[in-house]
Length: 261
Image (cartoon, rainbow, N blue to C red; front, side, top):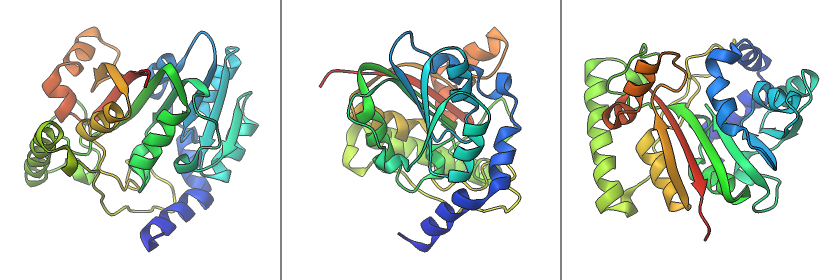
């Protein structure tokens, strides 16, 4: 484990302020769409990188069988105290569940916080049952344009946006013509001891092209995509579903089904 990776893991394991900030998020604005896509009529539901467990506890309160996993015992302790859900402290790179256990699996603002995104995606798909649903929410750090403010340094400034456009085009070409060149890329995190937001602690340059490529490689058929899942107006949601907006805006939302091997 590298020094940067070790420092990041220690930050999530011990920084209570980080999880207090997560707990202050308004559920209806941040999580309602994610919550809706995770719901399933039967079977178990898994939320990977569950933080303080808002979504899992809401699912459990609605009578559904929901489990949350997070690497941080601090987050898991806070989650367990505030609701009815089941929670496990574990790494997403080694999920402690059997193959094909869950009917629905998802993650919200998780993948950008790991140095092992490919391993984590493989684990997430492994524990998802055939025909099960996967919901993936997260930032697009290769943002070129968008309807919301560019909240992270990797999304701001003309020079950075030009670099992002170049990287998006490169990845789009590689995903079709040179798949062996596809890989996630990383950036230096800024670990704020006060746990303030803005994804300053993010390490993986998540973007829709990389995530779609690896999910499809793992047998996921994607049937829903949007850059504006949390918006309330129909026109804004429709704009967010346009292909060029989905690739270049600041957010990334995918829903897919695990196909039979």
